[in-house]
Length: 160
Length: 296
Image (cartoon, rainbow over all chains, first blue to last red; front, side, top):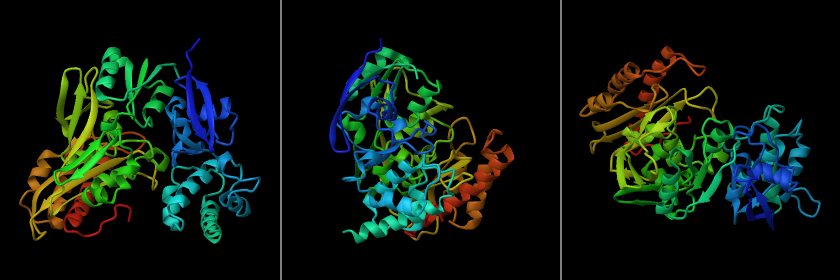
């Protein structure tokens, strides 16, 4: 029997406690222990960004974080973006701009886009492409994703 | 992934005694962007993983007139997020901005990139060009090692049983000096260097003559290479295209790359010259106070 560690953290604003093995990734615990299956496992080695979550506000690949490391941290996952059954503007723009096809990469792209727009509300196309380079999409060819992020920026500016 | 014991150290002494007790069965965790992948793919094994991110000394940096003291665990995003570091050590920022994508830079540290000791590491030519001193703590006390001597073979370095890299010490950013790092990859971001090149120069007050220079290459030998002869040959030369071309020829000659899926020997030797010339141009322009963007 492998010894488990108790971890207390905050996920999407709610205090959460769980038990995990040292070798388990944050992604594994999110999906399999906590039932937060919005974060996707693509490559499981830090290349594709499908598992992107915000850890203390910074975008990270949750497959490259050990769950035991997040004691006391603030985590935001894709499940934390919508409010009272209203989609976040970035989610809404991804839908309206058809910036997805199979959808596996989408939660990761939306979390990276949120991290970007939190820092830079009006990013250039170059900045969007550079900052989202850690997210891979094999369906869209990226142009629709870039447009959705640009439209998100406009919509979020209009809401302020 | 095999199971292992996980410990969080809060002081350097605590980390050293944990590491010393387990020897080569212990691994240091900073950002985990190399370590977790290696453990998962059984490229490295560990009975104990020691998280050192709660050790204040490793997570701080200070920029003074004496230079930059960079804690070994400071993640890349904090480096390029600091305007004063961007101004004083732009070559370091060139490296920090292209180690993986944003998600990786949120976690990965320059100290970790050095300790992973990949021949293709994007920070090491920069550290060599800036003549960085590595501060190491261990069971026998503290010691320092010049970064050009740190890596000993692919994935291996001078750290002994129980030793921990604590800090990287950059010399003061003198007036009329500048640094730059460039790498070539087949796409725009998120790939491993086919070749990487770092350059640092100190110019005279008129910005016309090179007083001192340091050049380094990645991915052309079993360890990142300091081009000592080519660097020394630049001293006293005019900062002109002819001089840069001489350095490029020397870099191509010294490069001892392998053939692999990223490039042939011939291709990498050619690239080594091209990138040394361009990074030298970048370092000189920055030393003159001009803007230079490695991505344009």
